[in-house]
Amino acid sequence: GTAPAGATVAHYRSLGLGLVPGTGPLAAAVPGAFDAWMLLLRDHGTKDLAEVLRYAIGYAEHGHAPVERVGETVEAVRGLFETEWTTSAAVYLPGGRSPRPGRLFRNPALAATWRRLIAEASATGGADRGARIEAARTIWREGFVAEALVRQAAVPTLDTSGDRHTGTLTAADLAGWSASYEAPVTYDWNGWTLAKAGGWSQGPVFLQQLALLPDELPPPGSADYVHLLVEGCKLAMADREAWYGDAADVPLDELLSAPYNTRRRALVTDTASTELRPGSPGGRTPLLSAHVRAVAAGKPGAAGPGFVPAPGAGEPTMARGTRLGPDEPVGPDGATRGDTCHLDVVDRWGNMVSATPSGGWLQSNPVVPELGFPLGTRLQMAWLDEGLPNSLTPGRRPRTTLTPSLALRDGVPVMAFGTPGGDQQDQWQVHFFLAVARRARVRGGLDLQGAIDEPNWHNDSFPGSFHPRAMHPGSVTVEGRTDPGVIAELRRRGHDVTVGEPWSEGRLCAVARDPATGILSAAANPRGMQGYAVGR
Image 1: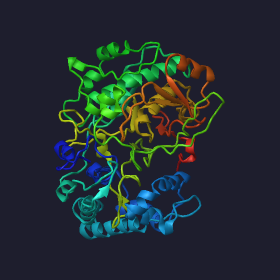
Image 2: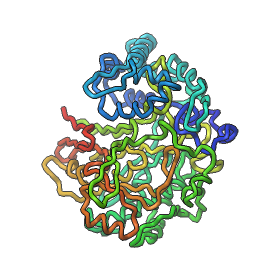
Image 3: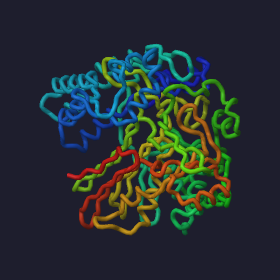
Image 4: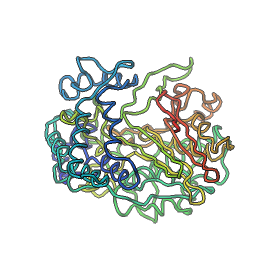
């Protein structure tokens, strides 16, 4: 969703803030996911609202077995929940105990929300499936759900600034927004057409990385290959910071043009760059926020008020350090960031959906007690500087990291894929896609699983999208099964390499359909043991 009418740069600056807080109601945009799902269900689905929601109701009412990371995350913010966000403690620390594997976790308030929504939508919509879905959309925007969200936004809440703030979300904001359809941004590469969300997301970063590739690629997995992709990613991410946002004048045609990328490709040398180097599409002068300029110059202290780490900030990486060898730095375990999910679906008729839902993770905002879920915090991705493509602006969406993908051949959809992971999403996805594109076909079609299983990596040599929005110039994190010779060569070239656990980078899943045979295939990430590929 978009920024509320009261979410202006002037208002946030008047509160002494230099960054949008990473938690709390000031970071809450108009919630958009439910309305988007309902629009998709109405226009492209066949099931009734009650049939779709009965699974969520069952899990919330009767319980589900949480993964280990949920309990660890709750424990990390136990103090915050017990002293400040007590409505969250009531849900996630029942009886003072955090969720644990093997112990069912329940959320009765969430189940009650869905039951009430179904009942009210059925009473209003009558016997017509579409009318019931439309009624549910209206109830969400104007009924009991909207009323509870607005009440919660008005509660003074401790956030990452260290102060208590109320939000700006109003009933008018919720009633005035609805999901809509937009054309994707596409790029053609070696017989493939890749489709991504527009410049209000980081999706075009994926396409820019492809556009920056030379005609001939180095051997996959070699130091030359990793170096090339890391350096190209840095250039694309620098353009993201300067040019992306929910604005009408994002120069995507120029950013994806051959002349522009020929010039940008020439910036890649044999050594690692530690600079943030946005381009000048069409001769334009890149505009960067004061915070970006400060962290890019290695002066985070000059970034302004609000630059403070705090419990619950951002999409926290739940890391477990493991020393992999006597000379290796301690690396993260690669656990996926926060509560972002990804799912891909394909049916026998060739319909495909790729979705990356996220935003209202459990440590983003206090749970709305009447509803059983919190507000989101995606406004933290907008800047408190006027005149930028991604300035905090009422009615505009923040430039998010969420970036699902579709791939077509000869105009026909053949693959849907994506991953959680914040700023890492379009790094891991590019590596996966290139692996799919070059790997030999297997029985049933594309070798999705082989591509997912290949060693992966990411870099953080650009300002992060989550509070406190830090930058780590030259940093690259690789999996521990990466060839030691490759690691040594990357370091020789100036990369600051952290070696993680052997299976730590990426949370990808994918589905595909062979247009010639109609055969469906799917693959899921083994890292973290949380991904599944299911066929029926």
